[in-house]
Amino acid sequence: MPPTLVCIALLALSVVMMPASALAQVSLASARYPAAGGTITTTSEILQGRLDEIARRSSLWRDALGPLQGTDRRVVVVTPDQVLVKDTPDAVSAETFAPTVIAAVSPLPDIDSEVRTVVVVVNLALLERVHRSRDSNVAELYWDLDRILVHEIYGHALPYLLAGDLSGRCADPEPGQDASDACSIRRENAVREELRLGRRTGYGLESLFLARLR
Ligand SMILES: [Zn+2]
Image 1 (cartoon, rainbow, N blue to C red):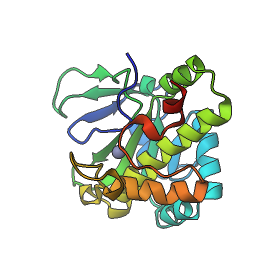
Image 2 (image 1 turned 90 degrees about the vertical axis):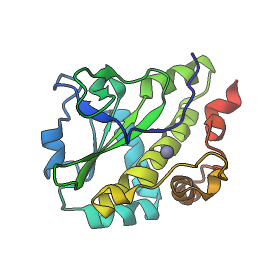
Image 3 (image 1 turned 135 degrees about the horizontal axis):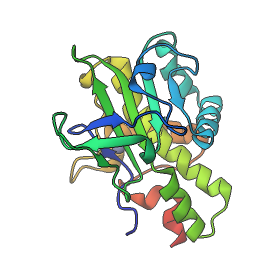
């Protein structure tokens, strides 16, 4: 099945981190308190490399992170093998991340409704597989990763952390709405401009490089 969505907001869902394993050492406990690694943490070397590059090139990104430095607020960037997803917070069973979804974002409000942790899931394996099947090069893969990280983190996750609660929701386009008017896409496009990653005008896959390779 081809990838169908760039981004799903897991607002109605609950993301629980997998027990720590060799690959998944990010846990909610460690994510919630100040730790080495800064506001945005990941155990993926590839994703860390892209995050460093985005931070180096985007002043908007750095400016948004400034007020969060030294706080206990975190964006935890994970891959699907590091999370389980529940339909509702009280659901008994948790499912693995949907294999055809490219990325998702989920704020994790505390019992006091404060949002100190936002989980961003990036389906790196799916993206790599699609790019490989289309013989794109590593730069093209990185451009798409950067676009996805900018959308999920700058578009969605940082507004939650800066607000400190769910009022920071920055929405994706509503049905019928011009995509470039939506909060998340406006923020994404501002950083894309700094990174010269093109302007996003739709809400599907068309603005990703992989869409041109079919
Ligand atoms: Zn989105």
